[in-house]
Every structure is written in C-alpha cells, then in structure tokens.
Length: 355
Image 1: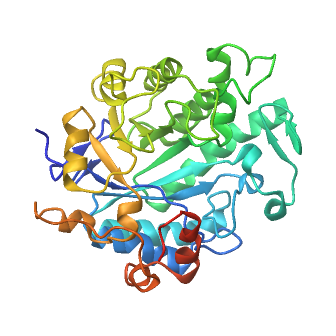
Image 2: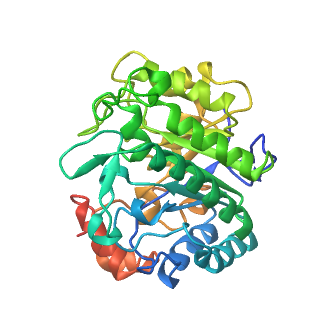
C-alpha cells in the first residue's frame, strides 16, 4: 500500500516530501487590501512546521470584484507580492511545497467588499450575466495571478473550480443558462475553466505546478453537477496541461451519489492519463482515513478541519497509535494551534466545531 510519508512527485518536476497536503482553508486573517497579515503567515507556516509536504493558501481572489469574504488573501495586484514572497520563502525553508489557490467568487462575491455588482454565467437576482469583456478579462486575471505566484517563489497554483464559485457556476446546468459559446453543452460550459487553465499554463510554463479543484457531484445547495460530466472535464483539463486534479468530496469515505457501488477515486484514476496526480479532500481525520484513500488510487490527501485543531497532524500521524483531537475545540486549543481570534471566531460557523 502507498505510504503517505513517501515523496509526492508531479510531472512539472515538483517533488513534495510527503503526500500530506494542508487543504486550502478560508480563515479571514489577512488585511482588507488582500495583503498577507502576520496571523495568516503564522497559520500557514505552523503547518509547514507540523510536517505537511504541501501547504496550500486559502482561496485568493484574482480580481477585486471576485472577493468573497472579509480578510481574504489577494493576488490581484503586485502590492501582494512582498507578503507572498515572504510566505513562499518561509515554507521552503521548512521543507514544504507551496501552492496558492486562485479564486473568483462570481455570484458569491461580496459587493459590500468589492464595490461592484456581482456577475456570473447567467442573470439572477442581484447578479448580472457575464459579458464577453468580463470573460476575456477574467482569463487574463487568472494568468496574471499565476504569474505573481511564480514571481513570489511559490511552487504552484490551484484554480478553484469547486464549491459553487465562478467556474462551478459556469459548469453547472442549474446556474448556467447561457445560449452562447459558454452555455448549453458541457463543452461550452467548461470553456471558461479550460481557457483560464490554458492561459495560466502558457504564462507560467511547464515547470510550474498547476492544479484544478473540482466538485464531482452535487452537494448541499450546489446543484447541476454530474459525475460523468466531471470525469470528462477532468480529462479535458489533462489535455490542457493540468498537473493534478483535486477532488473535493466533503466525505471522502463515501461512494458516489450517481454510482453508489463505486468510489470517485478509481473512476477519476481510470479517466486520467498516467502522471496526472489526484488529490482528495473530505473529512480525513486519521492516518487510517488517509491510507484508505491512497489505497483507492489517490496520490495525495488534503487535510482540512483535522489540521485546524492539530497543527502537527503530519508529524504526529507517524505514530500509528496516535489519534487527532476532535471538535468541539475550546478556543484556547485553537489559539494554541495558531488560529487568530478572528479565525477561531469564524470557525463557529461550523456547527459543533468550537466549544
């Protein structure tokens, strides 16, 4: 069985020291202008100290009008470069690979923060439909953001194509009702994500790691996503130059909704060419959880909520008998795990997480 402590290599040439990834987690700790704050720097660096082979930032907006929440890390301006450069250097010094998750909220952007009307694939209440100018601009902005990450010394970027944000709004039949080249068929609905990926790859070259996060199926209020369509999208992304696909499963132990006898990982493994890595996230708490996903064909496991209350998860899990602390966590425990007061307060939104 694959070991989660074995190195994880990507076809870009990046080699992480292990297969354990700090998942991209919203933490609301950066400055209002999107520059990196000390609290977010400390949060991310502490997970590198905790042994994670790859540390991902939170979703970082590539355009001012894409910001989804207060305290969000930005990467839409060169003013963000000093903080990102400092972070990349600190993570490298601690032996961790660094990836910035690139993001635009689309209809879920916050106009009170951006000062702009939100836009998406199609018109809805308070939302305008994207124009050709919007679509051309956002492709360029993703490429520009990826180049900034590269300039800062980061090891890669991940395009956030999951969780109901901009790219998902185009992929979903529930939110995309366009009748032009960006709506209707799956080929059209996937066009914006593919154009952005190709633009990113062209800008950063083949030796910079580029991934895409996908939601393979419907979850909660997120509708209009089909498993077989997601498999096809992943295949196209491989053709367009992606190094890995990151599956956000919410509960990685469960089989797919569409095919209850099958798990998503083997399906995506069969659909993707050899050399394209698969990362997986979703309620991975223990070493046993992680190993079971690797045995199904995942190449890396992204630890999210378990890493919030266990900063040293990747180091502690080397002991087969170790069990992570689980919620509800006292605020003091979260503070000891390098969460700022703002981040700890934000986690109260997750029912039962904070004592």
